[in-house]
Image (cartoon, rainbow over all chains, first blue to last red; front, top):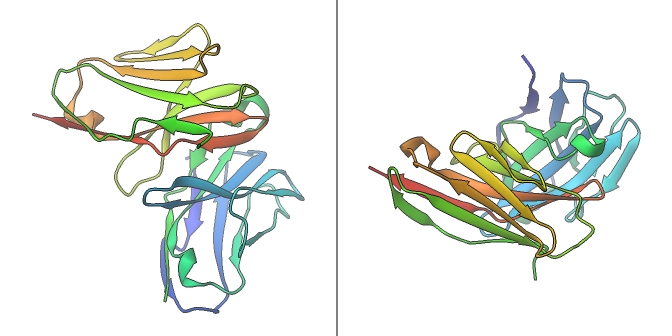
Length: 114
Length: 108
């Protein structure tokens, strides 16, 4: 089954404790992206990757890191989480190019930073 | 001003009604356009792409007006299952810009 898998789905952590949210897709997609969704602010892009070893900042990259060592994986790293990073996070992928807009999303990861 | 703006909603309509959502975008370099649907607490899912000639998929019709930088989504004969948030998405040079979404609630 074609899918984007995120883990963990739910996480409560404390300020400053490093965490990683994993994202994996099995569709051989070139393009992958992370978003956060907050009430009243909609979906905002954190980082995206057009291909292996190519990553770029989105609109709200501060406090986050990513890597794209393999095509299928695009982990999101919070080196020192803060309460303002409490949010619902989505990973998404697509074939890229003219098909970039046809995104497949993971089910979301709800993160709470205390 | 946001690059992609949508009617904030919520739209509360009875079953069987026709409802239209509007979306405007500010950057004329935008290349492709999409409507996504997001159910409460779930991930967004692609509803349909929007083509210059307009396109239809069953009860759903999408229109694009490049001159006015305007996109629309029309839902005919609304069903209870259409209740969701509808997101307008614009592709500008490989960067996807999401509107804030318009919430639709279809009542019996």
